[in-house]
Length: 162
Image (cartoon, rainbow, N blue to C red; front, top):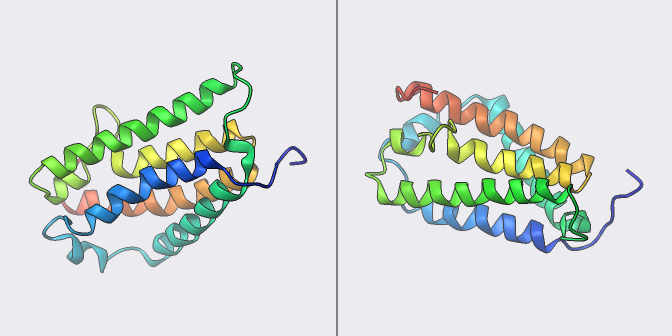
């Protein structure tokens, strides 16, 4: 923990923009029946998701450890993390071009189940490992339990196989 550096992370900001822009657009393009699923969400998972969101956003921005430094083998983790975010953007393009049904929202991308939930969680987890930042790693685990748990529940309800 002594190697964590406070400071602005432009990589964290980029990731958050890649996360928030499609989600903001989604608010105008929700699946038709989405609201009936939300009211049945597990309250504990919802709380973990909200706490995780706040912690991930904060940690991603306030630690400079995620910025690109010397290129070394460890940098492959950053590349893998960024690839996950690119796949996340592809997921959103596919969703916005779809009929915008619940099945479209909770679909897999190639062989990645619940791509809209798993890809950003995996990307931020790898970013935390790349930055050797236990705060982001713990925050992502909290977020992942809530976010992926909620998405898995919705997917089961709408008949999507996980």
